[in-house]
Each structure stands twice: as structure tokens, then as C-alpha cells.
Amino acid sequence: MKTIIAFILLIFLCSPAIAGWDGHRTSGHPSSSWGDHGHHRGGSSFDQGLLGGLLGGAIGGLFAPAPEPVPEAPRHLAPWSQEWYDSCDSTYKSFDAQTGYYNGYDGQRHFCVL
Image (cartoon, rainbow, N blue to C red; front, side):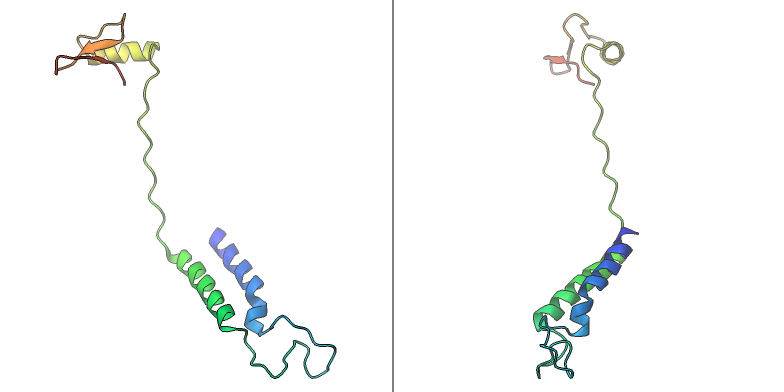
């Protein structure tokens, strides 16, 4: 929905370039109310390129695939909470509740992080 609203707003804002307005009003000459002083109508190449790029980006955004959801980071238990004590005690047989460490398979002591 946001893309459609942006597309409509883009068309509205760029409509002077589409109509060929060159940004100069005349001094009231009846044959030229939009500043057509013998110049070509339709704006400059830069204007047309900018408009094409913006319209192309807006239309391309309509057909772009939705972004993949970002997986949530693993939730760690707060150390020294009751849930942390219970989880560490049930996960590691060598868990020492006094220090918060357990003996790893590498022979080293590790602080319990769950």
C-alpha cells in the first residue's frame, strides 16, 4: 500500500515535467502561458532521465519480493536467576551452583551461558 501511495505522489510531483513546463512563466503573452519561447516542450534530458529512473524504481518496487524475516537472536538466560540455575544444573552434570561453572569435555572450567 505504501508503494502505491508513493507512486501516486511521485506522479503528482513530476507532472510539471510530464506536461513540459520549463520553470519560466511568460510576461503575459497570450500565445505562451507556460514559457514556450520557441524551445522544445517536454523538459530537459536530465528531467526526463530523472523521471524515468524514479518511475522505474517505483514500478520495480511493486514487483520486488518481500524481504526474508530476520531470525531472532538466541535468548540467553540471565545468570543467577532461578531459571538459569535450573537449566545449567539439568544440562551439565558437573555444574557448581556456588560458582556458576561446569567442567567441560576439554578439561577446562566454563561459566554456564544458556
